[in-house]
Length: 513
Image (cartoon, rainbow, N blue to C red; front, side):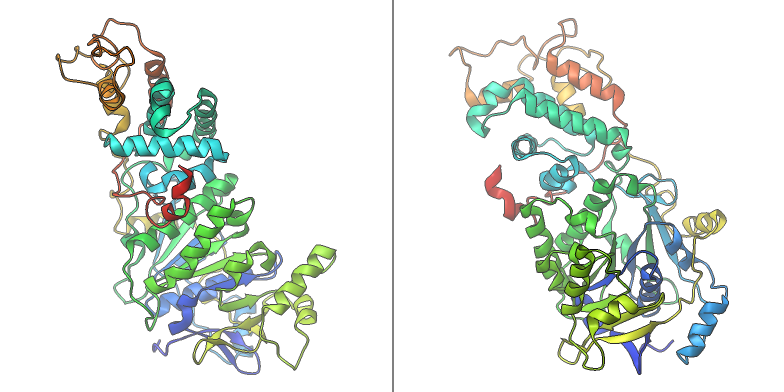
């Protein structure tokens, strides 16, 4: 296909197209269940891929995976192509499958440091006090050069600050055992939901999402999210982390002829439901600024009211499928959706929204100098790849040929905060004693003593957790750490230079530590 700089969305009285040069101005696909949102998402993903633009999309129901298989010329799609006066040409696209749980795709992971305290607080549903304790844990880990890579690292540093709360309070503020215990309980819940599989190494390299195949087509990266949706907070936090990593790591490029990557955020309401104001501000900032990095973000959700107004205002390309107006809230949603379009005098937008058939939508995209077109009632073009889930054989073949076989499949376990803290306690990683530290070797308690001095005014005794021999009883800290070692997954990863909080999101919450 010749690269004419447009993607065909469908046809009204004229072809309705998305201009690639404005595709990084973001977009929105909305509509009630069963009205055709997933098919529209697939049409756009195929269009971007044909023009050499890599795509990242979450596959909520498994239906979107069909882009990896050749289209099967279903009569409705052939008929739709004829109605639009376009050829139906079965096609398939190079697809890389990813899966947080490593079952239906290559494992995708992040480190605790990459996630940062703000997003972790959101993931764990912490209150302000508990989030403050989490910030203290990150701060101490930074100052002590302790790598926070997986959940047992985080458990270890939390246990340490609980054990030394009275000493740390003068420097960092009050740390209560109740707050630490609450965080530890939430970490246990996350582990029970297999959340520990997400934290570790090798962590995802975002450059692996931004590739073209040998034919110059953009590769479609498909996140298997059917099981991930059992933990909606993990799903939303993961996608926000990925979006923030793209923002933090990609260079400024300004406006390009076409995006470097297009990111589809399905079930977008999960990101905003119950989110604290500071997180909403962070999302708004990332969405507003990431277009200059060459990334287009497309939110997919049922109702335009799911998206905050500050974010909605930044979504220039719109596809609105049918909405039902049975309740007052539904009627409000229809009115809100209608008001976001540039009105067309040929019909009433609010009435049209409730009358749209499956596979039909109201569309408005950016044109000219970036102004929106008048809303048009549009027949959506048919996808050319398979619609519906691919077979396990096709999925396995795609994984085998992705080029990532072996890169992410096996977790790497290297020394990080947990091992270092255990070593300073005179213990091995499994909790067994090791040979006593040499005199003057110093442990983390000696470091704390150096910060704050000995409460009794004399020198710190050389017995104690930092330098004790193997036969002394374990402290409470050691018991907690040892218990965590036996229950946490053995997954340790690399440390990224700065966490999200200290990068894009950190500037917003710096005063809350």
